[in-house]
Image (cartoon, rainbow, N blue to C red):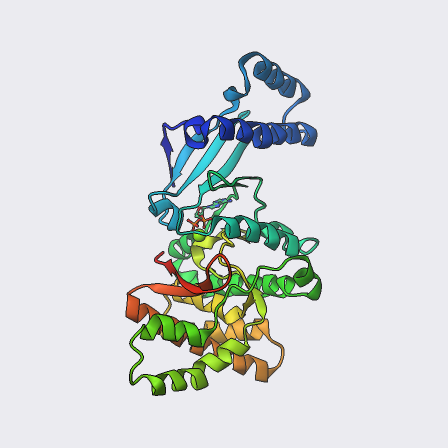
Amino acid sequence: MTQKINLSIRELLGERGHLDYLNKIIIPQIEAFGKEGKISASTLRKIKDAVKQKGVGILSPQLYCLDQITLNTIEEDGFIFDAILPITDNVSIRNIIKKSSGKEDYKRAVENQRKAREALKGTGYENAVPAPVFSNKRERVIVTPYVSGITFKDSLMLNPDEKEKKLKELIDDYAGLFFQLNTPEARKRADFGEAMVDFNDFFIRNYLGRDMKGMEKIVELFGSEIGKDLNSARKSAIHGDFHGKNVISNGGFTYLDWANAASNGFPEFDISKLITKSDVDADLEQRLVEYAASRLYKTPEEQEESVRRFAKNQIVQELLSAWNGKCLVQFCNEKGKKSSFRRSNL
Ligand SMILES: Nc1ncnc2c1ncn2[C@@H]1O[C@H](COP(=O)(O)OP(=O)(O)O)[C@@H](O)[C@H]1O
Ligand SMILES: [Mg+2]
C-alpha cells in the first residue's frame, strides 16, 4: 500500500538533483522502452518534442509514500518514496527513491548493493539484487528500479497456513544466493569488508558495559562456550540484515537493503534473523534450522555444526535484546574499527 503525496520531485531532490534524476534515469528509461518496442517510435518522438518545447520537468514522476515501517521511513531525516511516471496506459517508469537517515551508513548502503550485484554477475542471481540506477552523495539518496511483488513478510501474513512452506522456499533460495556470493570468483569480484565484529569484544562492550568487576568468569564462559566458535566461523559473505521486509516475493525472490552486508559472517546469522523476525514457534524453528543446515552444508557433521552455531548466535542475539529491549546486530562503524550498535527495531 502506498499513499499519493503532493510533493514534487524538485522539492525533494533540489533543482540540480531533480534535473539529474530526469536526465539520468527517466530519459534513458524512456529510450530503452523505445528500443524494446514497449512504446512506439511515434510516441517516443512526441515525448522528445514535448520535452524540447516544455523542458524535462514535464517528466517528473508522481510520488507515493511507502506505507511500511522501516528504518528510513520512520527516521525523521530519512525517507522512501515510490516515484511513478505513467508513459502510456501500459507502460510506466517506477523507481524507489530512498534517502538514508543518519542512522544508516549511506556509503556502505550504496557500495554494498553494487558489490552484491557485481559478486552475482553471470549467475542465476544477478537480477535478484536491484541495481542502484542513481545515487547522490550530498543528498544521501539512492534510487533503484521498483521491483514488483510484496515483501516476504507480507506474503507470510497473507498466507499464515503456508508459513513453513514459504520460509523453506526462501531458505532454499537463500542457500543458492549464499553459495554464489561465496564462490572464489564472486569473492574476488566483490568484497563487503570485514563488518562483523569480534563476538567476545562485542559481548563485553555491549552486554557487560563498563563495570567488569566480578565478571571475569562470565567473560571466560562466554568466550569458551560461544564467542570462540562464532568468531572462528566468521569467514563468509552474508547479507547481514536478512528479514522479511528486505526480501520481495514475486514468484522468485529479490534481496534488498545490503547496507549491513559483511564478508566475515556466517549464514546462520542471516537465517537466525529471518526466523526470529518471522514469529514462528519453537518446533517450526527447529525444523527450519535443520532444513537450512541441510541446504547450506553437505556432510552431517557440518550440518550438526550449523545447528549448534545457529543456537549460539541465537543466544547472543537474545541476550542483547533482553538487555536492550531491542534486537541488535553487531557491525563495525564506517572505518571498520570499533563496534557500534546497529539497532534493528523493525
Ligand atoms: N527496489 C524496490 N522495489 C520495491 N520495493 C522496494 C524497493 N526498495 C525498497 N522497497 C520497499 O521499501 C522498504 C524499505 O526499503 P529498504 O531499502 O529495506 O529500506 P530501510 O533501510 O528503511 O529498511 C522495503 O521493505 C520494500 O517494501
Ligand atoms: Mg530494509
